[in-house]
Image 1 (cartoon, each protein chain N blue to C red):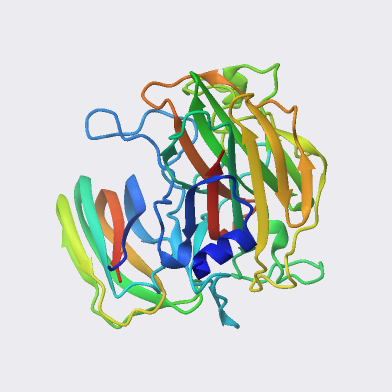
Image 2 (cartoon, rainbow over the protein chains, first blue to last red; image 1 turned 45 degrees about the vertical axis):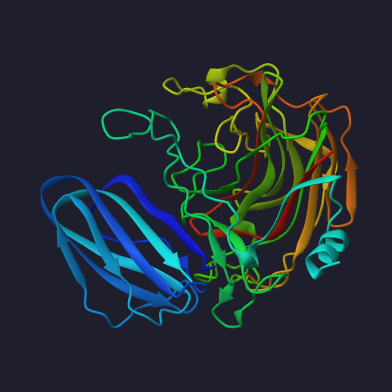
Length: 109
Length: 317
């Protein structure tokens, strides 16, 4: 039977501008999905995120995928492309307002 | 006898009834991050608090992979349970900064009538993030041992109408100064619930409950929620560089009838703790017979620090 785990990365907090999610190890997993639940907004924010990989959890590079942009309340899904190694994070830029987020990573493998 | 049974009996000294034997190379086994209660209006909001408890980072399965040596792995296979902090710390005497602690918890309960003794034992290691070389004139500025403030393990127990927190912490460093001693959870007799909340109004807390983030701290490393273990200084293995992990053993046994500590062991040293009472708090609703084993780690600087658990056994008799 496969392992599955969902972990919070951020809960119930307003964000604007740039931030990166906590370095998260997923070497055991074959697939990873970031769930971005936008619970509240102020003004008209746009969330843009780039999946990043790391060898050591300290130095980071883009995984080569296109940045993902999303708007609006509710649940948004960012599927990580295959071959992601071990350390994963999202580099986020929120422009035009603030978002109150519940941001999780779900992994299976 | 399976390999697992051989390892259980050779690496561990469990009591008669093994409640859980979790090897993290197989998965998280129900260990998860300790989070606040999402109970409030209008959208499962968190009760008002003085200490932000939703910034503790998630626990994860770690391969312990570092910049130069690559993957360290675990004592049992590749993966261990990793607790981590955010790279934020307040001075020791202040209330904990948002995200300066990492917690792991598993939630179980009493199940056999007459079980008196309860024990937790694990193989662990700890390190600080190898992020940047520190400035200044000190030797080995790339060795970050003093960034780790403390780590520990224990239980949150509620039985026979009383709740108690018991546990040991290794106070490694206070504001950058190495300390290296064990302290056990026990709140001071002469303090109030308000003292417990750093002397501040506006929190709901009870003296003796949740000493990892409550309880005043003093410049010499004293703490309203922890007391020095007699002869409790111990030099643990922090091996030459932040990317070398040595797996070490610790064990805590408590008496849930007398509400006392029994003994504590780390590496090959055993402390007799009989006669040391644990805190007793009035029972909380709906959680009688609760057994929650816990681990935690706290950073002393603006740097992530990590506690790794290879495996853990909880047992009773």
